[in-house]
Image 1 (cartoon, rainbow, N blue to C red):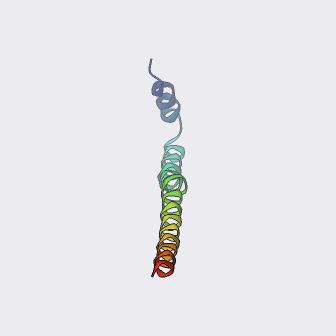
Image 2: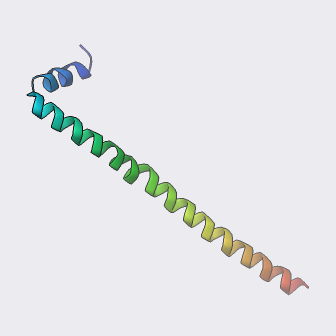
Length: 68
């Protein structure tokens, strides 16, 4: 018996309407969780990296200006 067999048996024991609603819920929840757990943190890290890069380029320019 695998881990998913009891889950499959439980799902199949639901009425067709309940199975449809559960499938719809999963179809909404999976992309939402992917967005919240993967995409948003990745985009936030990218924006932070861009801001750090701009600050580093400005500091580099200031150092070069002092040397000249």
